[in-house]
Length: 568
Ligand code: ADP
Image 1 (cartoon, rainbow, N blue to C red):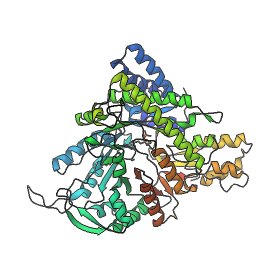
Image 2: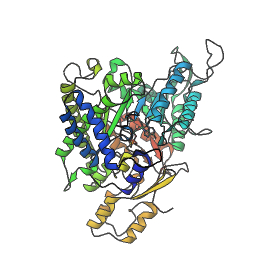
Image 3: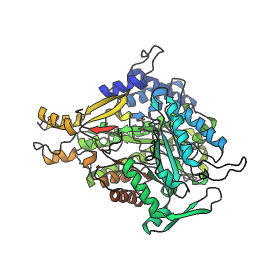
Image 4: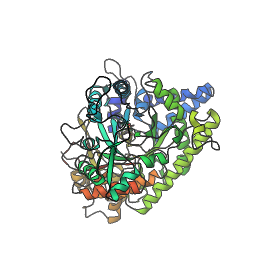
């Protein structure tokens, strides 16, 4: 078992390890990994004997405890405890009826209670002010129900471990779109929602050509108002500049690669955007820690392939042993059996290979690695289909009839916000945020500080390990101004805000090209960035076939989680 970092231990103790009523720990981190491995390997007994189950249990334990692969937080927290679901991602329908709205709110509360996040598209709701049929009066519209969902989320703490997360989507042709766009900036901002505008190709074309744009009534499909497409676009930019919200999700791009389009179009994603899902579908994620796969400055492809195959099996098993919050969710999830295998530690892998993040070499490497993971996970899932059968809706999917497949999708790049701390590596495909940085208020309001281990290691390797250098990076987390360090060295340690936003996007696209689901990525912008910069990134994201896009402008005075430097 790999030694865990101090930050990892603190997080595990605070939120993951099982505790008795008196607050005493009932397991060690090693026992936690054993609990999870045992619970997930149990699924094997459905097809094989106890022997097989035991052997997979050992293999899953090794993969997690070596920090090669970790499943999403709910699996670590809940597997083997007899309570709670194991998936992080859900999409629920919002029907245009009071009953539907409150039924979904109930299901969302149950999902949040156990550590999952929910995404909703509110576009089926009639606009505010619309007349109601049965009892007369006027509809309060999607905005008011988003606020209601936000308030409810606030009240349901997830077993004291994390507050729920939501994605709220409104399509760009909904009559209430302009109010929606301002929702994170106006008045009391929403605490528990990411917002995205559901964008279509024809809207983007209308923006480029400066055309008029129809806002349609969701029930009749008739245009009830017409505004300039650019007016909507500019409102989006203004608010994204100020608050990072709304982001965009590109519905046509998503549906062009929807593997079971026969079942209908996908309209929403989970909270961080990496999994587009149909109503009631859930998806469980897991991430491979790439920083562990560099041996002697070379990538260990054999070990990577082996880990991908095990991880796919692990995630398919999760679907089998999961406790579903409702039968609707169970049915939809088992129908398609989507899983989302992704990566973390990408930046730390590049550092070990001494490749700058903002280089074509890194972009090519991103494509090669993700292509490999995609191909191997495809093989792993089709092998599983031979053993266990195809997913139920297979005969309506793009794989029918030639390709056996156990899981309708296999890959997804999640943010790995917490599991990357557990694995002590850089999150997802993000560059290092700072060489020294703070995560504020993550543990009961406390801060976690980190100095990057690879930075220290490389300083030592090059004979440059001096206290003065550590003091300097402690101030602002950056090494670019330190004269004693060679340029080549510095280029490898550029941090998120020192990397041009286009390079952020290029990495997102490179990974997206080989990912069936989506990529969660924050394009960091300096505080000096203007509306034009956001406009360019948003347009390029659409042109380059991203499935969604989010930007974050640094130091805007709003609450943020990550801060460069570790001096208070
Ligand atoms: P982790 O590292 O904890 O496994 P990620 O940061 O990779 O999680 O997020 C993956 C997904 O988990 C998100 O897209 C979202 O669907 C869900 N999620 C993340 N944070 C929360 C939260 N605080 N509450 C509910 N769901 C969450």
